[in-house]
Amino acid sequence: MDARAIPPAALRDTDAVELARVWIAEQGLHCSLKCGLYAEGGVETETAAWGIILADMAGHIADALSADGLGGEGALLDAIVESFNIEVSTPTSERTRGPTSDAN
Image (cartoon, rainbow, N blue to C red; front, top):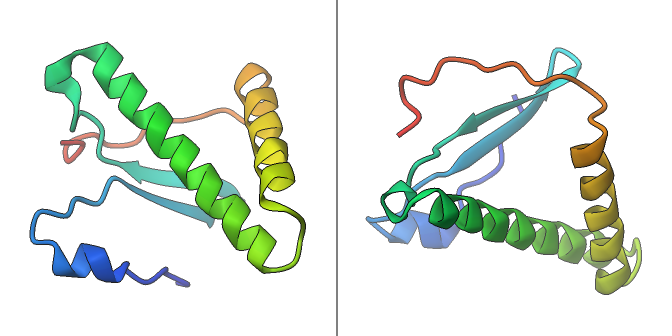
């Protein structure tokens, strides 16, 4: 398995929480998520938090692609957002729900 390194800040912070792991395996996307971290604020708080997390991740991806010489950060982020919106409105694959016993 080709796993990513844990960021140094997460190793230093005893209160760090892993929210997501994402793999491509068996020709599909597989995720392990920790949902509910912001649930006590209600569904609006939880969904807003995940929107921010996804937006921040998209920004990091655009930064990494730009650092690899694939274009400017702004244009790359716009392309990611456009692809995200297309996928949300017309998914290219079905999602299946796995075990949720450790969701929180």
